[in-house]
Image 1 (cartoon, rainbow, N blue to C red):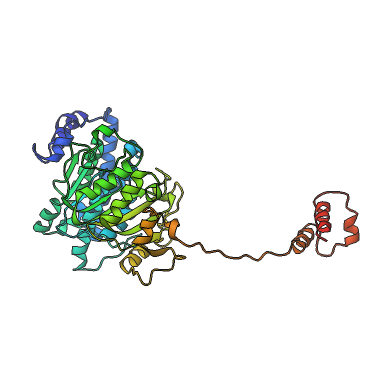
Image 2 (cartoon, rainbow, N blue to C red):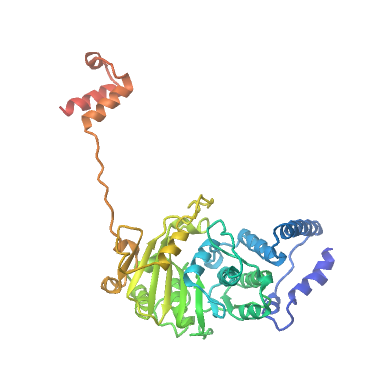
Length: 440
């Protein structure tokens, strides 16, 4: 078996889509690394068992086998221990679904992720569009996060498949991630995905004004070589989190929408590059929403506090809608255990779609609108805490004498004689009595 897979099966897989395909190009340097026949036999048996369960699930629930296969691949991707490499970590799928709802991609939109990793955002956009088509014909039960989603690509018409196949574009600087992303979309029914090995911040990447939608969670773990930064990017910085925001603006066509995750430092950083980046969002776009997320959303990979920016290139910002996400429906520790309910996810979608500059004025709430002028006057500061009004709750405390009386009663009982207590030579009761005397 080992010899057969090494010499026949693996070469066949590397050439799966033909010599000219992107998949074959990026699989060219892939190496088969299972060294022992016993390990291969165990792996094949495990895969057989998985496929047997998938076939049962397909026949019982009437779901297309291909779609279950894609979901299983997504689950396996979540287990891959490459998190943190080159600043990459897997974006939680419920956060991707949230951003897809807010950006609202349509069939025929050209969609891009300039730092795509395993293709999660592209898949999220694909599933959102597939759901919109399927939901017109039948009702779909919400998932555990309250989202209505379907990946039944097997039921799509050939025309819809062609359109979807030609509208999803992803780029990454990690060859392994490119392969994983290609396989991810192929497993979900996209025959020839447009995922390529490219540094979208470099001089060699010249695309601009091409995409209707850009969704991304770009790496924000440091700086890049200043000499290789694209000359189209005007913000004078080497910080990747700022460069990617401007780059997404560059990639969008006029009227195109962006949904991007940034570290919260981007929202309030005082440096010139930070201010210039925020100025682009406010002055050259319609900045629709700033949604701050708690620091545990990306655990166990990273504990940084992040925010979602939703904007449209070329629109006019009149007001910016802020929302403070307190829960995403999961515990905020390393285990990220599912909690009851949906957290704030569905509330964000509902309130965003119903946002109103006349009604969303109460800054003591967790969502509110801020006029553009106020943001400009504050050096384009986009931190929610800058504009939110704190609610102070006055707490009434008992008088110290009453508290001391209760503490003494807890030690010796309610009926203790004061004269007897005064004879106690030491200990906590003696000290409490001395405090009581001081208050007289």
